[in-house]
Length: 426
Image (tube, rainbow, N blue to C red; front, side):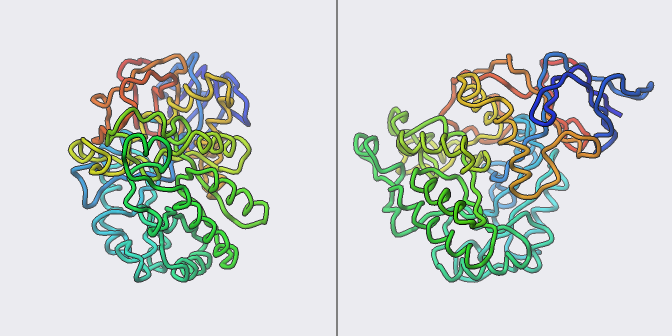
């Protein structure tokens, strides 16, 4: 038994100073003067925020196949440090989880090495090559959803047929939206800053036109269609219109697209290269408004670790992607809650309860009978982001040196302590 006392607990969108009693993987009671015995471990959380563990539907854990970038062992600990208790690893692996045999390699690694819950994706197409369908039927019982993340599905009929099968299996299609004919070899957003730096740009329509296609396909297929890492104002508009039309479309936004825009890129530096890229300031503003008004359903990190040599030098040569598991909440809290743009309750829900509601998951709440997935946060704790202190194998972030507040200090996943700040004694 584990008893958490004196924390400020988020219950029904309000903070209440109360206690939580955990027995194994379940919360058994919430209230004051809860029963305890000599075997009960008591943690005094006075002054700390207690919230449901965060859920991240978009991470890259790189195993099997790319352990030089990241391992499940390190990725899960990095996620736990960031307050995440459930994550969904993307399928751009080697082998790609396009058959049950390939998926089993990933499932076995997760069972052996992960300190938090991880529910992997299955691929939409074999090898994520967009030519043959993956084995939807045999994958479905074991995966969160289907995605070819990292690549847009170029063939409209292939996407449509995949949506129909996924709908029959009650699984979402989760899409990285990118029209290959419009990429033009770009490495950052096509705009003022790309012209100033002399770098090839990726136009906004590269993303938004595929979303526009897919929402109509999803309507025809009666499928839950979820858009990864929305980055443009046009994408927000298309999704808002689709929702108003009654189409079952949802979407996510990443912290980096909310806190930065392309003019923040100081020089040609591979650490700033991500896909989709940082867009213009008006896109950033549209994303913030879209999150606040509910057009954008939730926050996801797109945690994408790479080896250091893959990110050094020019954006024309570097790999796409930045890490985010360990810093996501603190960056969002610092940039948007401390500045009054959104409430703390709103942010916590966007990283937990709202994610669970979007995908009908049995997590994201603190109630008796709920899973004991909990994050404890010290809102006063500041940290200067230092990649050398990351638990992730990936060090690729452009935010090194940024001072943030609101670091998670304790993460409990399914009743077990998955991360504890070594500087804290409870």
